[in-house]
Image (tube, rainbow, N blue to C red; front, side):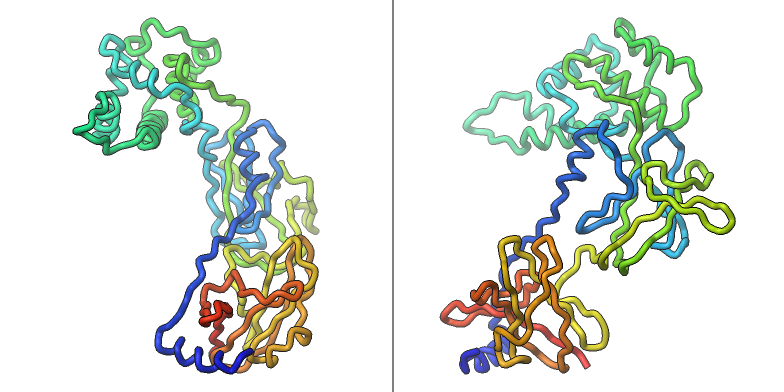
Length: 363
């Protein structure tokens, strides 16, 4: 490192710090595809970079999960995935037509729904219905309408049973919906009925949902060490193994457990360098194209060969280093090029635009 780097450390101490903006992207492609295709095979749990996601597929009043991962303490409540019972913005394919249908005062259901809409939603609808003039600019956008209207409609879906003969006079209901009207329904079933009623009353504007299953989920976002983790689901107060996980084991008493295995430590939303123990820190660098990565800093006299990072797979390189207490300056050498640590926002740059990172190690 150049001598002027020592001088720059004093500048840092007086507040001359340059912070690079970093964006950490969590690849959730598989998870997003699950939402988009509700008929796909649900694998539980789904382990992503930032969460371990447990799924349950089926009708129930309540679903919870507990296991070795939370020391079998209070079971974690699972929630119905948004979009399976409630409306999403994409479900209404014609917002203009739907809005105009709601303004139809001759339609008793439309009058009822308009009476349930929030003041903000009504204001947005009114503004977007007026012609745009040069003198008056619009305060709200079409995106604001989607968010507000969907929120209000979902509150209606989760409310009391929507059907009465007066409101739905003249609406052609499906056999499935008609059959539900004569049944005593639990909470989630009532949501399905209310959504069906709205879909069928405004079939020209709303894409119908597929109700072959209800999808529940719970997320674990705490650190876990490598190993095997047993767990079970509590479905309507009955303990059962996870039906969507083929990894099963039976204990000495004959109780069945589902399990998942972590080959490496699970570190959700982690920031590097990661404190491991005492004064040991784990340095992490990810680049699918990189061939060699090494760590350089004041602690190894900026030697690009003395602390190589070990390749862990999937473009990940890591190394653990014991550091003395105090302020340290470092960066990476990637295929011969000196680069700052993108995971550490404590950075500064000299006049030649050489950027390095800062790390404080306590006593």
